[in-house]
Image (cartoon, rainbow, N blue to C red; front, side):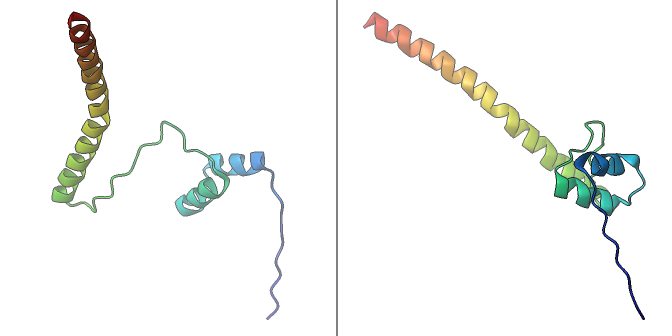
Length: 95
C-alpha cells in the first residue's frame, strides 16, 4: 500500500485564523496555541476538572481562594512596611 504525504506552509496569520475559526478539535487548537504562542481570548472560561465530584469541586474552590488571598497579601504587607518606615523615621527624628 502506497501512502502519499503533502506539505503545506502556513504563515503565522493563517495559523492564527485557523485556530480562531473553530474548525479544529480542542486538542488540535491547544497544540497549535502552545506551539505558536497564540494566546487564548480573555473571554475564554477556565476549566475546573473536578470529574463531577462535589468534594473535589469544593477542594479546588478552597485552593483557588487561598491562592487569590496569597496574591493579595503582599499588597497589605507593603502598606504595613511603608507605615512602619514612616514611624521609624519619625522616631529617629525625635531622638
